[in-house]
Amino acid sequence: MATFLSLTHPPFLPKTPTSHRTHFNLSHFPTLRSPIPATPFRRRHFPATPLRAVREWQEYEAAVKEKDLAKALRFLRDVQVVEEEKEELSESTRLETELGVYGWERNWEVLDTCLNADDMRLVGAAYSFLKDKGFLPTFGKYRNIVLEGPRDVTPSVISSSTGLQVSKLSPKKWGLSGSSSVVLAGFFAGVSFLVNQGIDIRPNLAVVLGLAMADSIFLGGSCLAQISSYWPPYRRRILVHEAGHLLIAYLMGCPIRGVILDPIVAMQMGIQGQAGTQFWDENMQNELAQGRLSGTAFDRYCMVLFAGIAAEALVYGEADGGENDENLFRSISVLLDPPLSVAQMSNQARWSVLQSYNLLKWHKHAHRAAVKALEGGGSLSVVIRKVEEAMSTGR
Image (spheres, rainbow, N blue to C red):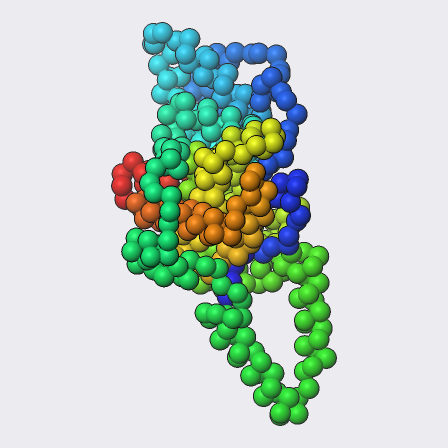
């Protein structure tokens, strides 16, 4: 069994069909004076009755349901202005304040509108807003970790730090290692047995192989990924992998656009192959737009990129997925000025995996909370909230 993931390709990278995908938006958006579309400012002064206040929040609920991030965020900002203007609470506003608990709970849901946002700066604005209001205290908490620790990470350092051989942190080729090799051997043994029994399945086999090839070429392996996702062990490993990407991106301060686990949904969104985590790094986008890339931004990108491999190694003792992650890493490494040598790329990959592995190990409880929330079908706001709760309680 193997899983594959990749990041959304920058304009200068060729698209590679994949079956398990982590997306990183590097597209350059037109310069705007504000990430929120300009609209006439309207302050919402809540009435003193819970029923009418709830009706006010129904406008926000509609925006969330419609996945309209700009509208939902604009509403929350208007509400914040009204709240800041209240210096004292009178009896007439007491009921409204009690209702504030309702509004406080609903603030999280703005994250569920991020997936449909075309402008990633809006996504970043949503995370900034929630962090400023105290909802996301650990968002970006370990952003400066990329500046710490030794840079030279040899295979022996990996082994002494993780207890794993460096080969355990390398993606597996399907059919050549692990359980996939057993499955492939069993498949050929079954075909051989049927042929020896006089049952010629070669025409049917040719059709199946043809459909599989067409799925790989035209749909990025979506159909095969959809079928494989029904196998519980395979799906569980995907959840562990994606939760690793999500948690490291979150702790690095990279806004997460969404997590898609259904290959068919991903295909409907124009994403070929197995779905995954979509995140954004504003600093990296800005630097690439200026034709440069600092070591810090590249380090942070690599940590998120290799976080899925690190998560699998931490939970299972070895990684199966991440082959396309490595391919993308090599593609970007050669575009640096100066480009990384083969030895430098190997060291950078080991450093990134080790950094992500240690960060996930320190926060196993948060990673488990993310896996459990994803497994239960939780939306992005639910997953992020569970991560924050785990980070605050330590369990």
